[in-house]
Amino acid sequence: MRRSTLSDDTFAIEPRDAARSQPRRSHRHARVAIDLFFGIRPLAYGDLPDVITIERRAFPAPWSLAMFVLELSKPTSICTGAITGGDLAGYLVCSRYHTVWHLMNLAVDLDYRRLGIASRLIEHLLAEAGVDERYTLEVRVSNTEAIRMYESFGFRSAGIRRRYYHDNNEDALIMWRTHGRELSEQAG
Image (tube, rainbow, N blue to C red; front, side):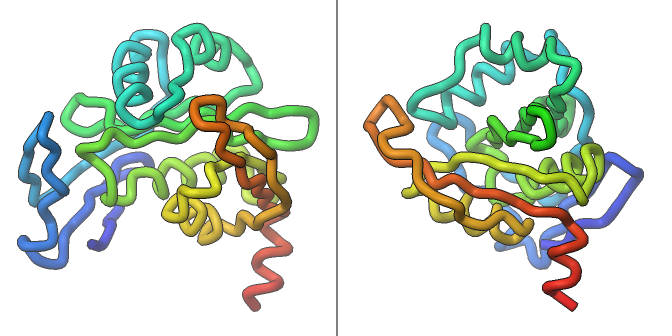
């Protein structure tokens, strides 16, 4: 798939061929899409019912409504959503703590996965908060796809939080992204 810019915050996912363009079909929501257009915008309190629906489908130990309300109310949080066809397809929640941004929650609805939405949400975060900022996150050690995606944005493993996830006592991998300039120098 290739992504083309329509405007600053609207993108089209254009499949290379129709056979590969069909998202995985869910037994709950089957759909066929040739082109998927989505925009990124700040989350609002009115988005919370859709956020909670995605959260419950995406995670075995979902956040509560109160946790999302708290993050939306913080002036130092960046909470964004990916919108397609009027529907919330995914969201990102990141909070600033002193000199570090903590990527706290990133989820894409099951029907919209593998279309680049999570990557676009992270790109938007880096553009809004700053590529030269420091970022951290925790991710399940078993979530190898997410770990690879985070690594593609310059996040690196920095340790383990033992038994971090309460639903199954799984460990969390702690990841850090250092300043963007350092990453550019390493690549060059």
